[in-house]
Length: 341
Image 1 (cartoon, rainbow, N blue to C red):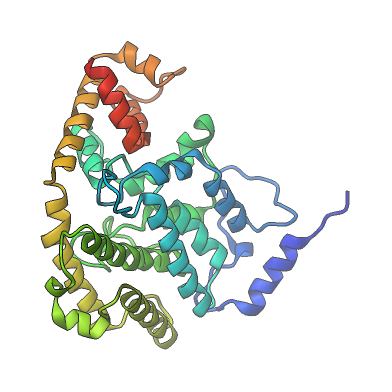
Image 2 (cartoon, rainbow, N blue to C red):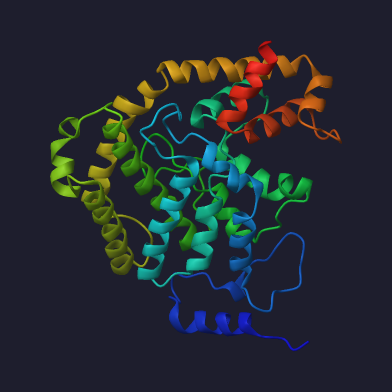
């Protein structure tokens, strides 16, 4: 059968249209842990994107909490809609800066695969019960490396794996690193800042829709500079990243826009994120997850049956973390009710 050589054509086009200073070229990938034959029609980063989209962890994101537990009809963002918003913003920035959109999209679509049921609440509960550091970005990498495809993993490229594990920010600010290391590629840095742009703005939007805050409560100077409407704020931040990239040949945000974005972010932490953990639904979510963890901690045989564990691996608390973090919000609710009978 004749080789279509479409991949080679795309790789050659990348050298013609992408930035020689900033972009990561598919041809120059550091490769996969397990070597594979190349696709005749897709670059390595296109294949990574497709593997992530077809994974069971990606599908489960639609039933996992972003910030607000899915208990009413206000239709708040889920992990899946958040992921799609990040991908859209990141691709816009990448295209404007002549970066590799395929790599950007793959990282964006995979960055939150490791999130637990009930958002960061679930993450903190699991972390409190294990002897290792449980963090959603580390769990995302574990999923693509070891847990997907019945333990075979997705065998993604180095660049996508690096972007997934280094996407997180600390509470200090948009540009503050969690693990102390910058991502390897410009595309990963774009996803990192796009993640902040997406969640900050859609969380403001969801908070207003749910009546938790009013637009008038947000810092007035920040709104005057960045924008009073949802779309305006996203556009201002995105254009700021693009201008910064063009002028400085690196990924970042202009000082004043970054300052005002962090002021809005701090407002959300003080007035929304902390209070969201204190709602009746959040308190119930904690109760359910704590009960499920402790039940299985002392009932290993039932855990093996309930989660269809055919082969024991690593240590037991790692198995609990892997399987409980995999659950969706609704699966936790159903499981809790069954175990309480």
